[in-house]
Image 1: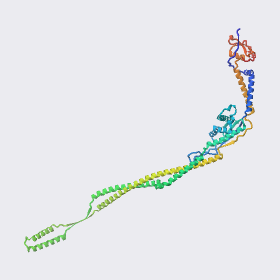
Image 2 (image 1 turned 90 degrees about the vertical axis):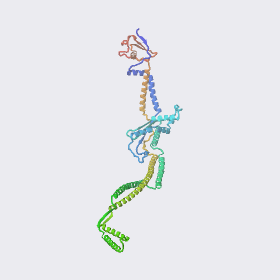
Image 3 (image 1 turned 120 degrees about the vertical axis):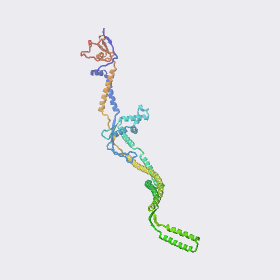
Image 4 (image 1 turned 45 degrees about the vertical axis):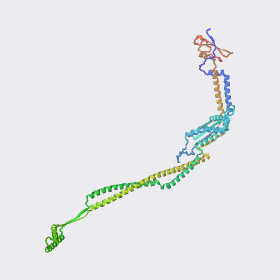
Length: 525
């Protein structure tokens, strides 16, 4: 015969399922579906009953009542106080609560590491491993969130015991408040600023003592003021020296002019000139001549002409006559000192005296200027030293005032910490829950949905790994040959399919399942 008998065990299926096919799969796998459904549902109910979850919450208010001073080198730093808390600060506080340091302290205080290490699976774990497991469990069961448009942080925790849930949140609140205080306040500030204040006080006393000893060592109480006064006097001395040198130049020029003028000026000046004859002299000479002539005539009568006295007398008479004959009129000339010459000599002497005085004054002024310059330099050095001492004393005073102010701020901060005055407050304390956090109705609905999903998954997996043909349509779709007959094998549960391999694509003749005929249920191949 043209047909042949074929048993198919493995064939890939690429069919689109209908609702009828899905229901058929459920009926075929009803035993596995029933077991899976009730097993998952029972397991969910057992888990809820055996491991109840109790949730409690607490709320922390972040406020702006206390402003801690900033530790800076400024004496009066600006205090920027804002009434509202920024979102970044709220997120920072939330992250601080989630930090490992805070959560590890909570684990240690509540003994979560001891309870998490019980059981056969944890008996070989180290304390550190148990603490890490407890930390991970605490982090997973802890919900921390900043409520929108508020300054409140809500913290909720879920535990298997109601008292443990409240204990954990109380411990978390206390540890967080303490950690926040430590984060915003550095320990040992009061002792540090107290010691720095004492050091600054000693430095200030030392600087003041050096300032007191400075005038005794240098002989000047205020070298800066003395230097300024000395420089002022030095300017005056320099001005006087310039004036003196100018006077010297003027005197030298005046002396040269006066000496040149003295050379061209006569020492004496003729004041009166007159001419007159010498009447008395001429009369006396004539009287003398007459006397001489009378004496000659007397001698001539007595002596000879060659008498020597007579000859001498004749010579006298001749000379007297010659004198009387040569007598001229007398000139009377009167002279006096020249006033201009006298003035020139006086001015010249005065100019020379002034020149010597100016030169001596210039020499003395130059010596004074040198001494004043040396004194000004010394005073300048002393002024610089005094300024250094003043700056040192001023710095020591500023440091003392600054550290005193900071010490008072640290003391106030310590007092606020001791009285537990923070910018945080527990707005809502955790309470011990009376009922589990799970709703029975929601848990039942969740268990039912989970059972249906698990059952569907199991049925689909079993159907997927089943290699047999279950419907003639699968045969036609997979083998693409006409189906002649499908006879179920009761012993093996498989179909014995008869196909017409020689007819190519089937035309539907001989298919007992077409034209509205019901397809029989087929078992696995």
